[in-house]
Length: 119
Image (cartoon, rainbow, N blue to C red; front, side, top):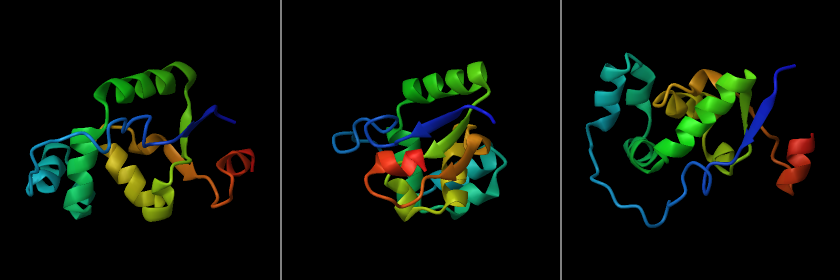
């Protein structure tokens, strides 16, 4: 079995979710879909794409990439984002940073989250 990184999003790779300001771009999903040759990005919610692209910490994403490469790891999403977005959408949003293929699953909807991770 490959090593797993149990990943939360807010506070980890989206550290300033409430205080970050950015220029909102209605065409960003289409621009990224063309640039990355990934049509599914164009189907994501425009607000989601702007938040992911503009607010996710590039430094944290790079650390995550290093961990994946060093340990040949896969990612399991533990974040509350798993409640809102299905696995395929989470994979597509992480494809913006070339990480979608490493998102393998989400934890079950069990509380507390530590119990979900243990499952």
